Length: 218
Image: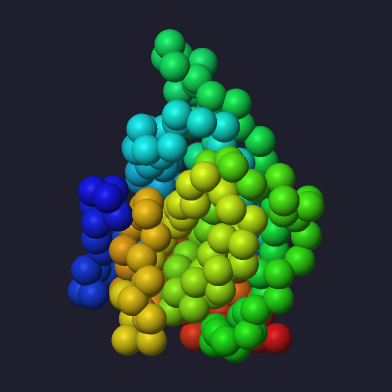
């Protein structure tokens, strides 16, 4: 599975970019430290992931399962690129979408417990190529639990695309099939990744400042 190892690796010493170089909503100006991954880079990487996903999974009806809320931006952009591939090549496949929510975060710590809500009757996954789309894999525990649950419905293929994977000593060693960026063990926000529901309305992925953490604490 070549796609699992290839991703953009952001080193521990990556400083990111000065906020003044990009358009940042005024209301967040003092809450952020640096722009970590600019929006354009996210889009370019997502376009490439769409191509890899179609190559691996495009032989059969795909059910794309969005993990809310953090995954919604990546999900929408990824699906746009997949739809473009469907339109512009001789080979195209039907695709359906569904949405689930997993709850495991409070402030910037993972609570280790998961609640799965939403989603249609999951038996629709039987015999289909299922693509789970997630914003970030932290320890990997949540995703492993979800995969165990979904395997009970006997999908034909079950793969995971995550925009970010965190390099953390807390990792259980799980790695998704498709990864946009591997990032250091920092708390990042933006492009639908939140801190207690804030920063989802930010285009870029940024590191949060201590001021920001304090201001939006639960």
